[in-house]
Length: 176
Image 1 (cartoon, rainbow, N blue to C red):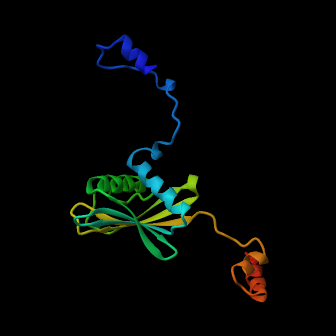
Image 2: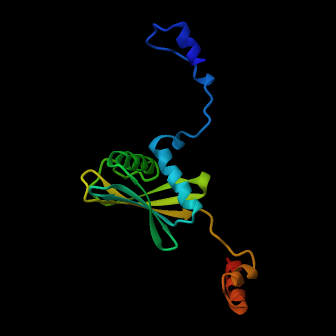
């Protein structure tokens, strides 16, 4: 629709187009630098990471790392410019869930959170100062929204518990 209007009136400086013509196919959060962060979270969850680290390294850039089974692995390095934009987008999103978060503060330690119900995740964020001016380090803890409960004694035995211990543990979870 918009291209056809533009062809009919090429000299116009402003085009007024009814908003209902456009179909919004994706959540606004899935675009831009926040979209980059959400893609990172999805990738981390897919490989079983418990933490995402953004580390500002002088002369290098913003280093992205995942913690998987206690091992921290470097995934990617962003330029400082792109890194600043990603961290700014994360901080702005976190300010929706953490009202006292100062999005302009880069020299102080700050804690925040983000809820991602579509991914069944709660994120805990810890911003800390870095050695790079205007940058921060960030650690994101991925927390599953739903508690994992054993569905039966066999689940506990599969985790390595003896049958007697599994019976005690399972009965304790049933009591709640």
